[in-house]
Every structure is written in C-alpha cells, then in structure tokens.
Length: 121
Image (cartoon, rainbow, N blue to C red; front, side, top):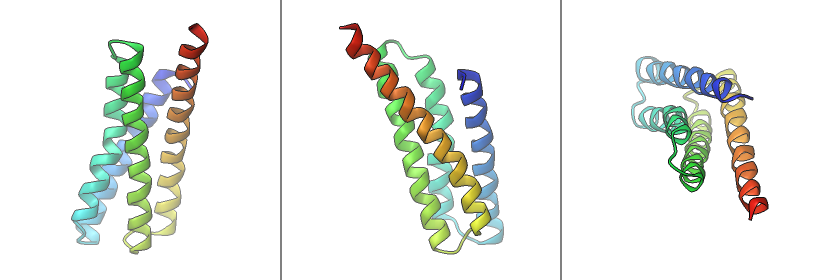
C-alpha cells in the first residue's frame, strides 16, 4: 500500500468514526464512549501525517508507534461499544475490518523500518 493509499484509508476511517460518534450521540444518547472512540479513531490518520513529516528515522518510528497505539485503543473501544450493545454486529464488523487493516499496515511498516535500521548497521 502506498503512502497516499494509506492516508486515504485513514481519512475514510476518520469519516466513519465521526459518523459513528454522531450516531451514538443522536440515536443511542451515549456520550462518554463516543468521545473516546472519536479521539483514538481520528488520531490514527492525524498521527500518521505527523509521522510522514518526521525529522529522523527515530522520530518516524516513534510517531508510527503512536499510530499503532491509537489503532489498538480504537479496537478496544469498538469492543466496548459492541459488548455494551451500542453498535450492531454489522457496524462492529465493518469498523473492525477497517481498523484491523490499518493496524496491520502500521505494524508491518514499523517492523520494516526497524529491520532496515538493524541491517544498515
């Protein structure tokens, strides 16, 4: 996946998360978890953009690590929302598929970058 493709996936995921938050607030009258998932879900893309402008390889790795953590936190909140019956199985499955793909891509990028550093020494 190219940098632009990944960024586009992040943007699309953020839009879905914003729509989920709107749904949770308007239809479910749920505010606390909706705020949490919005923060973590939308920060995946924002932190990825920061990683793309990293000042060094170490900074890039650090920022990608933050992206990975935010994706993992988003997975957590999706599980909580589904387990609490605030979202349907269809909503859960779709968002878990999306965030899972983002998480795997970031994890692979981190491994590749760390291996490159190790091999360059």
